[in-house]
Length: 116
Image 1 (cartoon, rainbow, N blue to C red):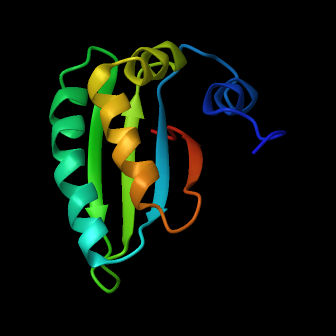
Image 2 (tube, one colour):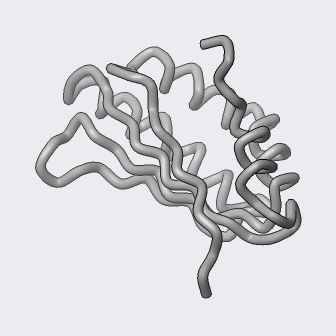
């Protein structure tokens, strides 16, 4: 894993202004349906609490209709600092523990600028 940029580094590289709103789309593949069910349950708390954060605009977890082992996490943030705060919360860290246990392969995250 060495040599890979952290999300914070990628955000600073991708965004012209660290205080501009942006969105993240993370694709996650889990080992099987049972581990997907476990991830879905763990993410419920993460989503509910994340939506209460001042810097969060929206946070959604979606499960692929044709493949129950694929999830799409879509979240929008007011700034890079908002994501930094989010990643320091206990509920995010707890969700990350579950995520790491159920992954079939490394997740991919796309950084998107808000067009309108």
